[in-house]
Image (cartoon, rainbow, N blue to C red; front, side):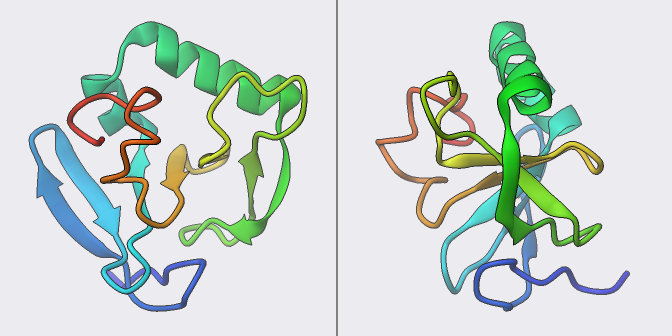
Length: 117
């Protein structure tokens, strides 16, 4: 499998084994991603449902592109956004992208399950 580039800095994303599965981490800019199926193993159902419904109905295209399919992520901003703006979703590949530092940021801790926060 060809290495996936970080959509922010271009370095390779490293698959990192966590309790529920793989998390893709850029060790250069500290951003990362997790697939929705893995996130479902760690996050409450209500979080997953809200994330996905918001992406489908209230999201907008991001300038950041999914490293797997190269299409723009869906981001959450504005008055209708009920999901943390640090998250971006690829509705095609089912990836959830986290801004640099968000995998360990306390600012994201309320929006992510403890396994990823």
